[in-house]
Image 1: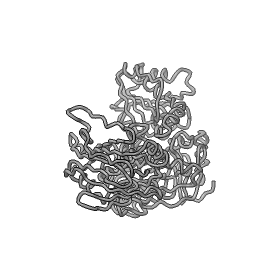
Image 2: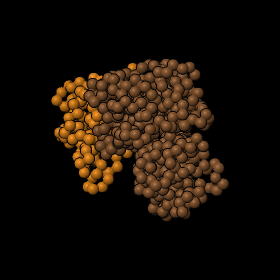
Image 3: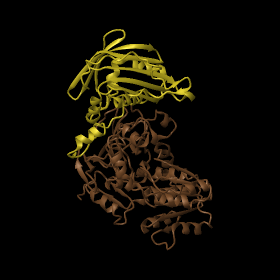
Image 4: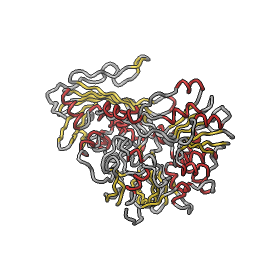
Length: 213
Length: 396
């Protein structure tokens, strides 16, 4: 990610209704991207109770187990933590603050300085018919359009990263591990192997999921 | 270890690659004792499947001995003999709980590639492109099996490998095709394609009570196997009239109760995010060959069922949907929900109701595999099914 130091911090969430998908009975589309601002909303049906999912998400020190390229999260206060992200040999850090914390229901956060300017919210909602929990994430990034295009070509678009991270979270919550195939044995790779790996999203290491195999 | 690697269109090589190892707690490493080449591997050989990469290890029909297990695998032990299903399923997600194992939400690490094409991703598969998970396949001496506590079927009797190997894909696939055909006792069932899946579809149709099976193909050796199962056969290459005429003649003009398309298309078509339109356009030219599906829809009786085990990947054109609607037919299809069928079908083999090894025509070593891909693709040497012994020392 680019150096986003000079950008103003994202405003606190929620805007309008936050991550919600239904407002007063009507479907609510996700916020549209604006100049220098990206939004992504994604959701997953997870076979685990809201309490357990909230607890897994809230334990931010465990984030490196399921979030891509997050190297370390250190608790710095009751509501604050410092995040370190490594992309190839580029390392960025930022501080994050929890804005809303409702056990088994909702967590909202924003960055409060450092190399990334982002804000987000996750909602845990009992799905109808006893079919599990809807986990809905709304995340906002502030960055230039050029940066976004570049990230899409060379690595994970930050929007896709949010989608993949929720997928990893769901897999970890449901199965106790995150599926991975990047270590698969293979024969001789061709000349464009690196490009293909990047195209398939395989150049981003799958997070470990668990500490012991 | 030695493994059969895809090296590009019309090019597979047996190479020495690194051994697999346990990565996740629910993994197992299997020492493979028998593996096979599937008809669907020919789609890879022909270069129709996107997201293959040179060096990918092929093969999704395999069985063997458990060599090592991850910390969370408690139902398998080193030394157990197992057949491995070609679809990988976690057993925990919404779909696995509904026993829609082939729709597992958690087993494809590259799910986003399939989502771009299909809206949603199916389960991961062994040795079948990166969009299907990027897992190494089983035409090798060892394989890593994820979610080994859910998938592999333990073989505790002394049945030979060849009798149980096809529980890994084609026998359950044929059985689910017959089940999807909603056969009632005495029904007439028409099956297009008498390759390995077609064979097991025919056998399963009889198991489910079909009174008559009409088998359609153009290769005499396959039709002969179908007749051996009790089917009546139609060689469409030799029919003067159309297959439709033959089928009407054979059913007193009303058509079969069920029609089964065990042929499918030559290709899947799947698009990547970045090259979505390019690949889509290029593949449309190749995928637009639903000749059998059109015939099956035309031929089935009013209110009948069309079942589709044959693989389709992209968009199809000129579908007789008016005929489908006008006759009020039912259509059922999809990748095989393997885990549902393996155990009951093993019991049928144990009881001697079927010996799936009858379709095997060739037994080879890993070194001989590259040449056999070409021979099978070109329909030479009367190949019906190729089984590989990965430990057999025999040069190409």
